[in-house]
Length: 117
Image (cartoon, rainbow, N blue to C red; front, side, top):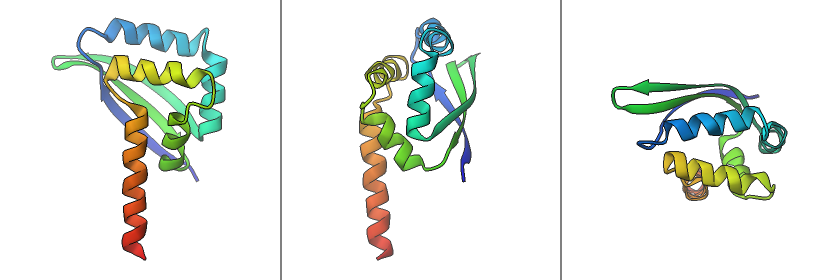
């Protein structure tokens, strides 16, 4: 069963226009690659909205995810040729290192499993 998730992610200062172009690429020239990546990773993007706020630009992502840990791990593994480009975009636009975040989630999951034993 998939879980519906809404993420509000700040965009680094001065990167809002670059994010708009990123979104256009995901919906245009990179649409098939993005769809294949999402399918492989167990992720369904149902919508995204870019907002300019007094505190800076943010993006609101609406997702459906079956397993957060597996999805992040699959996104971070970089097995598809599209993924390094996606990872670089997330780092450039958000300062978000997907590989480090995935590793932290995996460690937290491992610690939780140890506590349950």
